[in-house]
Image 1: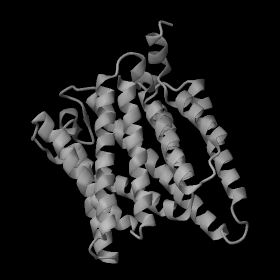
Image 2 (image 1 turned 90 degrees about the horizontal axis):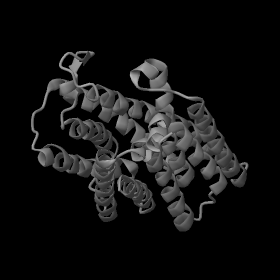
Image 3 (image 1 turned 90 degrees about the vertical axis):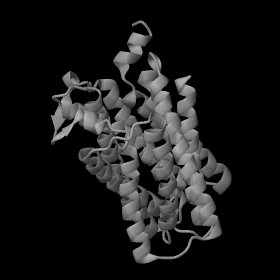
Image 4 (image 1 turned 60 degrees about the vertical axis):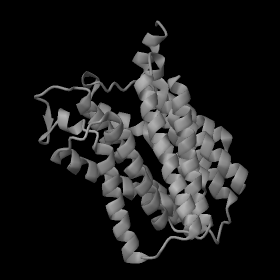
Length: 317
């Protein structure tokens, strides 16, 4: 059942990605779209967090940590939006999803197997396959484009997706760091003055969106300061709902996951996002999708993200 919820989460994330692209096609800007989308996500996070759990206690450390995570989130979304303006949407979102493999390598290097982050040869092979798949898809796309007129755009797009890739890894590391603290709920555990019971507050996600909205609203008011167009209202609010539902199904999936599902839930989420995003980019925008390269990338995500100890134990090996 958890896998179904995670597939729904990846479907709604791909839908949110499509709505961002549709907003741009309708003459809107990423700045206005993100203001609307993140505002809706904030209210949804309040409903699915403090209101749903009836937990309204808030503390300074979780506010600061949430705001900082929000700043990283908006940096990611801004870079993503600019990359969509310069390059192919399907490949851009594939690169975004593929970043999910590499936080495990960083956490393993810092904490090691004793800290709950083993890194096996399978994970290394998976990381290499992800890079091969992305390079293969990117090279084919580059060869298909005009060799002269599109060179500046290609260079800008490459810089943007590289920055997006690194920022996404940082964001996932913040998520994993918080999860690590929450998994060791002892009254004495403290990291940088933040205690585990404080970081577990339901206000983390709302404050993350507050941080993102503050930065995005400041940028918008400084550069555009206008009233949204009718289609921007539509796509922005719809995108916020889609991303809010994505978060709900993903979190609910992790809550009800059992056995083998715990080991494969995030790889399935990443692979599903790649598949659904490439489907709409191919069907709606006629983008040439290298499905073989996507398959290599998906296999790399599967090998590089699965907790193989849990997977093999669930299978009785």
